[in-house]
Length: 488
Image (cartoon, rainbow, N blue to C red; front, top):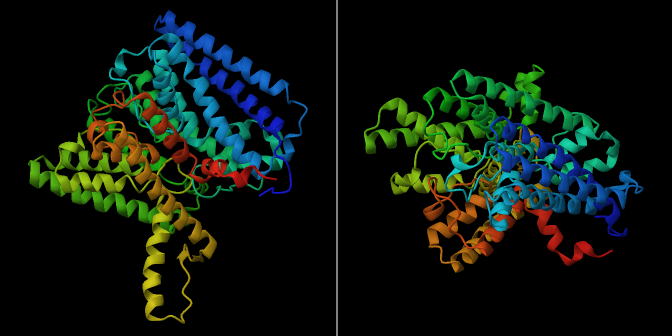
């Protein structure tokens, strides 16, 4: 890992500067909604925040603009991605803080990190009281974070060339980059192109269901990002069955690998239908939703269609780490709540906008466990783990197992830390699992109809860190905590 070369901090400064200037432009687009609704305070806050973000980004760029951007190595890639996400959250929180609508900067940062990491955990007790411009910016943070703002920058600035691959690997959702084109900038364009098409299509379909344009585009942003921020206090519960089914469909699409969407659009249907991870993903949704539907009908005597819709919605929302709700699953029976909790350890497919552990890791783990049992019976047999008829190298399997071990250790340590802040065991565990998995709603006092407002400030910083490492797949951030990483 670039062990013999010094870390190029000017290069890091240059790219983060470019990123902040891009961020300021996206931030400024929120002003249009505040102007339309006559929100003078929000206009002022967004303008000041956008201007300050642009100036600081320009400063970082100017002090390092002569640096050769083509020399991005692995170390620079990891540092850029980690510090870029921290930077955009620090500056992205300014509109909420300066406007006074979230007067505590810790709360503003928590809300913004929750947005960019597509977690969906919120400290807002009355979402509908927030100005429209700031709600739009809140939704946009999730949309930008879903496919990755750095991936977007690579698509817009192809001049980054070969060096951009290091950034793509470190940020792109999933375990490995989906190379749809030999040039990384072209891959980034294809991914974002599909992302934009789905966002527009969902916006139109929601408007057909009588949802306002403002609510439609906000919910499309946060659905495709599998983020779960809503413009309503009741999330999706107050909307019609049609709208709920539309959101279910697009949550499933967002939790599917975007490379499979690309193949489908190219007419390569067999690549989709033969994909083992996708089949595992669909089967899991179907089986758990069926069990929950039957349980809701038997236990609560709910009508078949509503039981099916509520069960399917909650299963898809938690499994894809979106976090929208139409029912309070904490009012269900204990075995069903346990089922929801187990779904928090799944996640979307590789290359999707979903967070969590990811389907591919679970599938490889199940297959490897089954083959280990066979090897115990036939110790001389060579039986490789195969996915899509291809053998998985042992180093990849070891990487997956290490990821799962670290993930569980983080859940354990995070729950211990959160319990220090007077959270009961269920709430501490739920908050840690929900933020590390980028899910949003958790269990106990941070359940689907509650917020994170009551958690002490230091606890919010801890959970913000968990959101960050969860979104960047653990290793990208944790590597920076290793002294070895910083040595020559």
